[in-house]
Length: 155
Image (cartoon, rainbow, N blue to C red; front, side, top):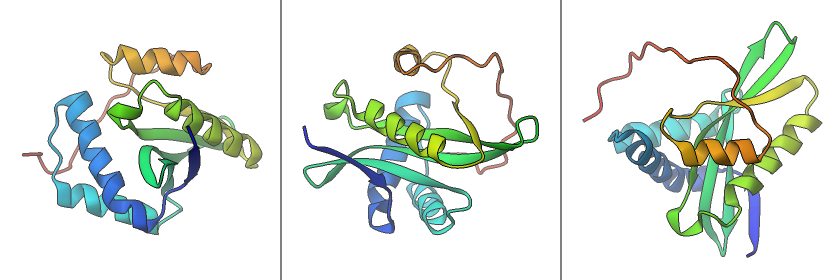
């Protein structure tokens, strides 16, 4: 398997948006508006201060992705990187794609001054994802995420 990990580019936007709609349906049974998802991807790709995508490529095709966003921690006087929008194509699961993406991000974070750690959140019922995160050395933080969502309702 010749897997390359690289930063996502505007040329990847359509595939990333497609992966994002697949994630939402698979993990939350949520149907995203494709136009909104595509616009969200394009916005992030054009505004690196908001975050960035890392993609896994094999044989010229994207087979996985994750998004990094940033949170300032006053307690740590530094940034925490949040991993979001994790997706690996079903035919590429159990082949080390997420592990390669995660290790790449971990190395980048450790090499970036001021980054204090990596976080992510996961659906409570997604046992397979939680097992993968534990296998990489991540542990539950003890926090529970609450939200208020003003986004338009999904169809």
